[in-house]
Length: 120
Image 1 (cartoon, rainbow, N blue to C red):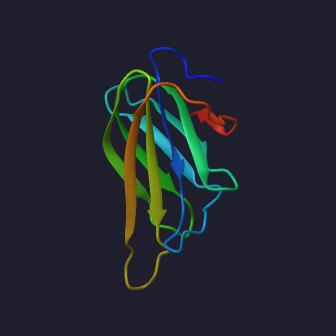
Image 2: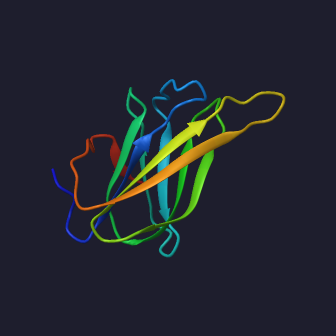
């Protein structure tokens, strides 16, 4: 299935500090202008996709119990763009929490598994 015309996609994977996948993490894209949010859940391989997002600026949040919540503020989407966001939330500990992320953008439509996506 190709992305809807005049829309964009955010996709990626969520892993811990050792590279192990984190399934069932909630990933939310909130449009900074309209405040409309779309969310999904990472699959058993830690992969998620947020499809058919209108162009705009978004705050992306990934969270799961036992892990640090990861935010990507000010992610700007343009028509037919695919942005890959890789989340690396480390487990919480009494010493504090650290996390990282990586961002990569692509132009043009791609096929993604969208079965876990729903509007919030």
